[in-house]
Length: 209
Image (cartoon, rainbow, N blue to C red; front, side):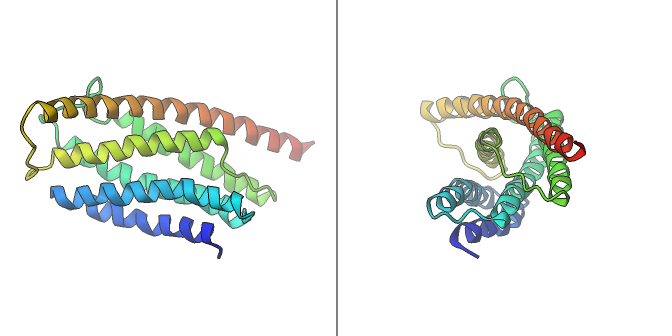
């Protein structure tokens, strides 16, 4: 258990904390969930950098790091989607109004498919580490989810919005920022899924040849 792997394990432990905080129907716990989520998401960049810098890249890290990312995604995305559905009638996200179900299906479907294929490759003795495009996809997803956590926190009953034009400007910017990264995350999720499918097909072709 080296430091990069310990950080990855910490991200796994942070996932249920984010879920528990989001499920509290008050603004303060949801704000704390945002902070915990941001630190957990940033740790994904830190553990990878440390592993490469210290020459501590391990098979454990290659396998568990993507799983930790997926667990954090599910732990935050499903509660945020559920909460946002119950906020219909409050200020809406530009273009989408609420977080769309089809986007959730794309995010989670891609992760389930790639996890299944990774497990199959592992049984063939191949460890498939996260690729650059997958990391960019994860970054876009994390930015969207972090922004969405703040969005639902601001719409939670009991939140007192500051008055004035600055808050109105920020609220409009925040809505478009969340929508933009939702669209970008969907695009990168689809493209990275196609890339991984090509990689796994080459693994299978090599196995059969």
